Structure formats: structure tokens, C-alpha cells
Length: 458
Image 1 (cartoon, rainbow, N blue to C red):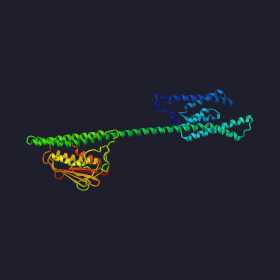
Image 2: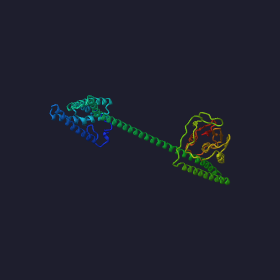
Image 3: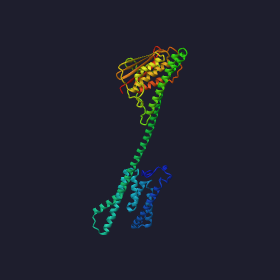
Image 4: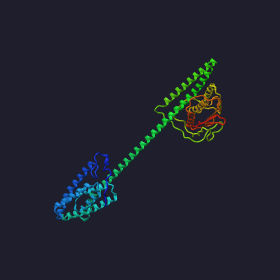
């Protein structure tokens, strides 16, 4: 029977984990010291018992002592070949030799990776042999001492001796084996939890990076909405001021005053927005959370229509969801749309405003979103459709508020105003973040159309 490769779990460490390179099958110095010490004790005990046994049977005691030394020294091989050690211990049982060899060998066998049925088999063989030797020895002693011990009592004592010498080391070895397996299982679980924690940390870092990117995009969108509208109006008024400065000084003075008012309004809005960003960047602020996107576009007047329109690509409606949790509850309201339209009219732009439905509060964030959509749409008209007339239609519906901005074709070449190309993207992001729908594209007559729907029930 081959026993090569049997090992005792937990008694051997990884060879590379320690500075000592190892010796044969030992990986630790203390393992060598322990096994050599046990083998020396077993050899001395077996030599003494072997000499005593050979004297009884008429063999020179020196030969018995030498055989006992060899048999006891076999214990040094217990980690490498535990089955061989146990078989030697069973073989010398009739000579009443190798008590240490037998007990340590059975402990090692039970604690190793050898199948349990082999351990039980060898333990039964050793137990039967020990019981037979004990029975013969006790019965002989009783006969020579003229004691009146009965045969059943001698048999019982023999069984107790056999059980006492065989069962305890086997049970202790099985206990150590189970305990080491439990420790290995717990260690594997700890390693698994550590790996899971590392993965969670990586995912948290990715989520934080996405949140920072979303916050940067939101800040850029706010800056674009605030600056682009006011600056475009200031550019228009500056051009008008240049053309009437010499012809109509009074009108030029009024335009200059209006230009200063617009600059101050732009600075005021920037200060308010930066103040909100500072207060919203505190330690308890949650990162922005995007809403899920569904399908559908919107048009005015009439119910929301599914699909996409416009050559520039309409964007479908987003599914109902809460507004971004990071956006502040401040900003313009729908009540300020009239003033926004009036500012565009003052810049020479033909704008009409129509409101449908019963006006009601829709939530600060929703109203600010609709306001910014109208603001950016009118800014785009001034940039890309000079002289075109625009219509703004606002509709209050049962569970949503919708807006439509339509302008006709340009009547003049567009002024060279800077444009980042992110206006429509910013409007789309604002609307879809609230679970609404957004669509934009050219009209058949050469104009442009922007429509948005934002649900009010969150």
C-alpha cells in the first residue's frame, strides 16, 4: 500500500513563507526538533523493551535492543509515511514493544489526510493485537500468582487496556484534523471577504469618480446657462449701441444703462449659483443620481407623443424618477418667464409667450429646469437665427409641465457669437434627469423647434 505524500494539515507551513528553505519533508525547524526528540524517546523505549522480550524467548538481548532502536527510530518518518509507521507499530505489538511508536503513530495517522476508514481499520487491528497480548500477559501472571481472577474479568481488563492504548490517540488526532480544517475554512472565508472588500472599494471609487464627473458637468451646465444668455443679450445691445451712439444719444444712453443692468444681473446670478455650489459641497452631500431613461418624445400643444423628431435627433423621454438629489432647491421660477421674454424683446427679438392650463407651483427644481430650457432656446435663436420670430408656449397639465419653443427661419446672417455646441445637450440632461422627455430639431419652414416635458408628480 503506497503512503507517499500523506500530510498532516496545519502542521506544515508553506516553504516559501519562511526564511528556512526546509529539510526533506520538514518545512520548519521545530518540526525537525519535535520528530527527532520523539524518535529518540521511542528508540530508547523500544530498545529497552526489545532487550527484555528477547531475553524471555532466549535470544541475545543485544540483538533485541538493536532491533528496538531501529523500530523506535521509525517514528522520525511519521509525517512522510504515517501508514508505514503504524504498520510497524502493529507488527511489533506481540513483542510488547513500541508503546510511544504506536500512540504517536496513530495520532499522526488520524490527523493526516489519510481516509478515515483506513485509520479505523488500522486502529481495530492494533486494538485486537493489543487485547490479545494483554490477555496472554495477564492470564499468565494470574496463573503464576495463583490468583482467583476469572476469565471474564481478565478479558474485560484486556479490552480496557487495548481501548486505552488505541482509542485516545485516534480520537485526539481526529479532533486536531477537524480543528485544522475549520481553521483553514475560516481563513479561506477571511481571504474571500478581503477580496470582496477590495472589489467594493474599487466600485466605490468608480462611483465617486462618476459622481465627480457628473458634478463637473452640472456645474458647467449651470455656468453655460447663466453666462450665455446674459452675454448674448449684452452683445446684441452692444452692437445696437454702436449703431445709434452718434445718431440718437438718448437711445444710446438707455442702451448703455440696460447693458450695465444685464451685466449686474449676470454677476448676481453667478454669485447665487456659486454660493449654492459651496453650500452643496459639504461633507453630508450625496452625489448626484441619474434617473432611468425610457422612450418617448413630447410636443405642444396636445398629449405627449412617442418617437423622435427633428434632423438633429430627438431624445426620448426618461422614466419617472426623482430629481437629482444634489441639485439645490434654488433657481429661477416659471413666474420669471415673462421677464425673460421681455429681456429678449428689449434686445430686438420678436418673442411671444402663451400659457395654457391653470398655473400652479411645480417644485423649485422642475420650474428651474423648464426656465433654463426656455432661456437656452432663446439664446440659441439670438445666436443662430438673427431676426427670426420665436414663440414660447407653456402648458400646465395634470401630472406634468410642458414647454415648446419654435422659431422661424433667420432673416439675417448670424452674428459671430461663440458657441460650445453643448446647449441642446445641457437641456436634454436637465430634462431627462427629472424623468422627462426632450426633443429638438428643424421645422419644415427652415426654423427650429425645441420641446420638453417634465413630470411634476415625483
